[in-house]
Amino acid sequence: MSKRNLTLLTDLYELTMMQGYFHEKDANELVIFDAFYRSNPDGNGFAIMAGLEQVIEYIENLHFEPEDLEYLKSTGLFGDDFLEYLSGFRFTGDIYAIPEGSVIFPREPLVKVIAPIMQAQLIETALLNIINHQSLIATKTSRIVHAAHGDGVMEFGLRRAQGPDAGIYGARAAMIAGCIGTSNVLCGQMFDVPVKGTHAHSWIMSFPDELTAFRAYARLYPTACILLVDTYDTLKSGIPHAIQVFKEMREAGIPLSFYGIRMDSGDLAYLSKEAKKMLDAEGFTDAVISASNDLDEHLITSLKNQGATINSWGVGTNLITSKDCPSFGGVYKLAAVMDRETKKFIPKIKLSENSEKITNPGDKTIYRVYSRESRKIIADLICLTGEAFDENHSMLLFDPLETWKKTLLAPGTYTLRELPVQVFKNGRCIYHSPKVMDIQKYCKAELDTLWDETKRLVNPHEVHVDLSHELWHMKAQLLDSYHFE
Image (cartoon, rainbow, N blue to C red):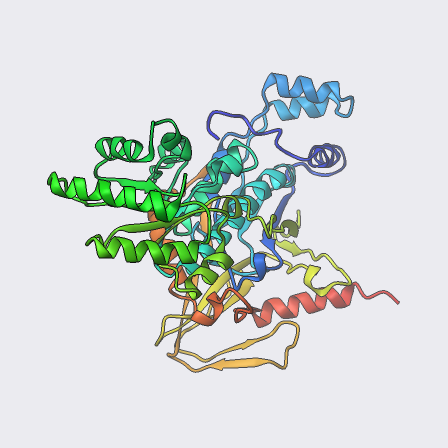
């Protein structure tokens, strides 16, 4: 990201609207945009926020190079006065965001941009591109890690990712959501995350025989000796030869600190159970039994239900592409415009016949409501910035659509945490992005605040995202004001 100028990574209409604002409005008119999503991917009970560090890098590097301006001029769409304005373009606004690794839910602002309308409009496309992609892959990964029930999950998807960026930043998102390592060496270098891998079938095939190949690999990597056993015949050749090498290592006094087998084909449930019997019979009870081959959360769950003895999972295509749900669906909507005279924000709302597409107006923030006893999430509350709540008073939560559904929280039974943090102030980044492995620890703690019912892979319990009474009342008034006879 830091080596590329992504300023033109935008949809054309962002620039044509900017030129329209430049000529028809006050280019410095202050506005608020919210980035949010409408439904959880994969039918999940939640999503995972990811990509903020790359958004920061993008914002910090926003500028138009001379060749960018020449290209825009060549389209015939933009005037010299507007292009002159772009030549000195920089972001000068404020940004608030939910930190990476956070558990997130539909309709709540993940990123809030307060900036002159020209600036806020330009960053829409790239911001959504980055947040949508990494949040999608992080959410998919969280499902796979959950299905593995504590077994290690390795990200192996680079060769199947949709291009280098998707491979690099998808692996980053996967690490945030709980993978123990990635095969992507560049991701490892860029983000200081563990890289893992064994060898391919070509390694075995390049030697005169399987046993020779295994012995050579064990000599090279005695402390990370995971042998791929399905090149020729898993049960009759691969596993017996692996066991022979492990015996030779043991007899030579080489500590078997991390060793085992990997299978990439066949009936993984049956083969793993047979492999476990064979390894245990020779005293290799702590050997890793790793599997790959088009795995996802559903296949891992099925294999576990069949009694598979696999304890390490290499997941590639279905993780890095989120194959069964390939998009996140985040959107970016105008929420308020500052009145030039009063210097107060005027709330704006988008209407739709689909109630889910009606936006929440105004300058907002989010409070997460926890049970004081269990520390589990009760609900999220979207409210207007500046609203105050007292945990020593009762709190009434209600469904913003089916308002008769209410929950009254007694004083002292709940706690509150404001989710968004300020990332940019007057165009300057004031937020330090944690390292990926630190974000992973935070993400694990976040997942621990969910009830098990919300983490179900199928038909999870919904965590409610409610509106404060003040915000709900403002929204209702705006809806009424747009009622046409």
